[in-house]
Amino acid sequence: MPAASAAPLPQTQPGPAIPTPTAHFRHRAPTPTPAPFTLRDILLWCVLPVLIVLGLRLFVFGLYAIPSGSMENTIMPGDRVITTHLSPRPIALRRGDIIVFKDPANWLANEGATHNSDRLIKRLIGLPGDTVECAGNGAPIVINGVPIDESAYLKPGVEPSRSAFSVTVPAGRLFVLGDNRANSADSRAHTNDGAQGLVPVGDVEGVAFMRYWPLNRVGWLSAHHDVFRAVPSRTPAS
Image (cartoon, rainbow, N blue to C red; front, top):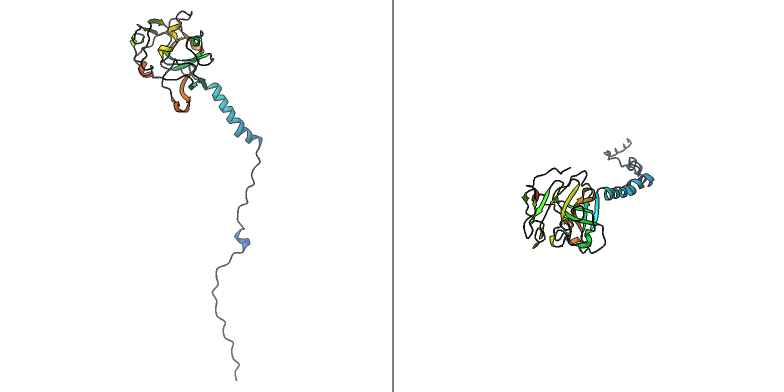
C-alpha cells in the first residue's frame, strides 16, 4: 500500500514590513540646546534700546509742561507737549509754528504761570525781515502788507490785538504771539525791553507738534501754515 503524501502547506502573501522602534526614531533631528545669554545679548537687547531712547530724547524730541494760559485753547495750562529739536536747524522755522524758547526777559512774570519755568511757548508770527503790525481794536494782524485771518487758532472771543503796534523783525530774531491774546505777555508787551520783544533764534529749543498729556487731550498740534500762505518773504536788514 503506497505511503500517504504530505498535504501542501497554504501559500501566504508577504505583508508590509513592520518598522522597529529603532527604525521609527532613527532620523529625528537632535533637540537644540539653548544658547547661554551672553554679554553681547545684554548689550543688544537691554543697553542699546535705552541708548536709542536717550539719544532721541536729548537730540530729537523734547517734553514740556505748559505753565500758563497764553496759548488757550490750543494748549491749556498743565498740558504736556512733545517738540522736535530739528528746528530751527536743520529744518527751517515757518510762520505759524508753535515754538518753545527760553524766557528772554522774564515774560512769565506777567502771565500768571502756574509753576516755575524758564521756558515759554508761543506761535511764531514774524520771521527775520518781516514787518508785523496791527491797528488794534479788533483789526487783523498784517504781515508785510498782507492781513491774515487767525480765526483757525485764536481763542474764541479774543481779538487779534487790542493794542496797536508795528515792528520790523531784524536778522536773528522772531516775533511771537500767544493764541490767547487777552492773556499773553508776548512780543507786543515787551517792545521796550531793549530787543523790541523779539526772541533770539538761538533761544528756540524746538517746535511743538503733539499734546501727550492729559490723555483726554492727546492729539496733534497744527501750525496752520496755510494762514500765512499769501505773505511774501522779505530779506532782513543786515
